[in-house]
Image 1: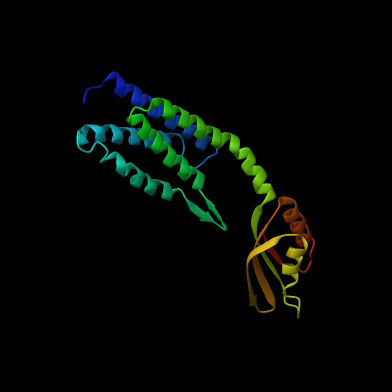
Image 2: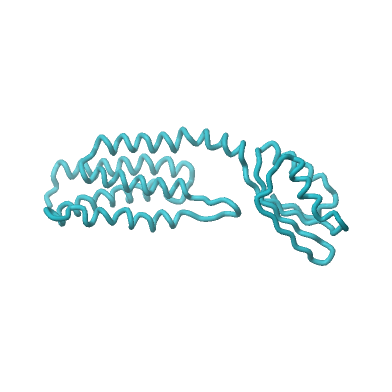
Length: 211
């Protein structure tokens, strides 16, 4: 394969598009950043180019079609669970889209790939503002409260959660000696969470509080 003008454009565009998406992830200190997304976009482009050359004329897509399968393993590596939240989904989606744009570049669809890059960056930058608003409106937290056992009072904190307008998604309690530790996964807006936290911090009967 000769180093043609078309090949140089494809490789340069793959580095540029992967880098643009990678910069956004790097700014937010995500696990897959600038260099990673450049390599993913460049790799997808090269696999597509090689697939067209090796598979010509019968099956030019035989290698490129496996890019989607391969990229799934990389995407899965950046997804992890932290308490009751799943993190890394957006980064995994960015990896997936970077590979898709790389395939588009390798096939010669420059305009579609550039437009796709603009849309990806727009969603990552602009829609994060709406994401923060939604998080304030509908926030999920896990509360762990340890307090002395009192007859008929073991559900008082669960009732208090409901009084503050928060919705309980999951609950568990354990008793060691004369102490009860309750764990609640709770959903509600940010103001209600703060009001509940303030109340618990002022409760002298609470010996441990994690939130």
